[in-house]
Length: 406
Image (tube, one colour):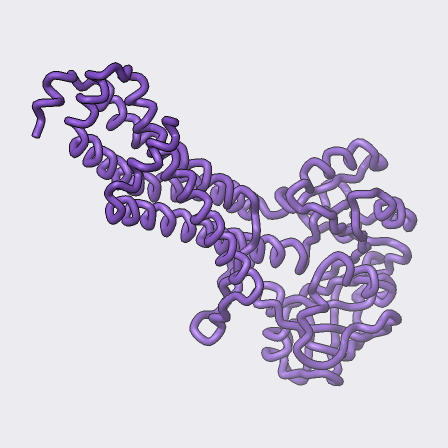
């Protein structure tokens, strides 16, 4: 009975109720969409930082990640297979790294050579998926090389051209050999595009005189956000002298960016809903003031003050639930459309590198349940808090004075 009365009272001033409802629906639906777009940007940054180069987890010799010591190698060739057999690990890729001078035509540039097994590497990172010219690195790579677009431009080379790489080998000699460019990749990350070259692992092992040895094993896991927990479990099982790092250890700026996003999301929600709450408060204060005489009559014929308070709170609850359903549905629909189609901004802006990741020139949304239940839940809380003061005022009215109110 009280619910039906509250619903009828809610629509007595239809225009005011619709205006308040529309403000609540628009604010919640746009907030859900905005949070989805922010999640999409964060997802792009995390993917570019981890899946383009580092991987989600990395196993290496103790101290190697600090100074990239040429001699800090792993000799266990069965370790990648053992890691891949874990249920949370999707794939593992052994790598060898060298730094030296790369020459093409009459120009030389410093470069990082990453020796990989192409079949394994493409299951861990997306570097080879960013090919813009030539062909992928073959499984039997030989002396083939994939070179970053910026480095290729500086050296003036393209697919089919030859390069000379010079570096220090593990036996103290000067390692040098020819490379043939098979393809050019472009990731949007200037650090990779301007200085990275992918080569076959056997070729680089021979050049560095490190047969059967690698510097690290990069891994891809099912849930990147759970990488820290997986790293802790792996650390207890690895042989002595080996360390395991999650992407947060390798990219502390990215870990801070993820943490700051969670805080920023809450701040944005609170600021927007503070303004929405003022609108709800105004609506129900006006409704209570207009119905002062009505409330006085109801209490004079026996309605308890707590019942009056409950009736006004039920009105705010019904308005909040209706706004929650409509705003949530519209917000989910807009998030789905933005996730499916997105907006390409490559003609207006260029990729931006931040915290070790790259923000791509596109707008797209990523679905995260928190981006839905947080705005919807807080909308209901704000609605009830804003409705409490008018309900409290209505319950404290004196029947005789309220009846005389014009």
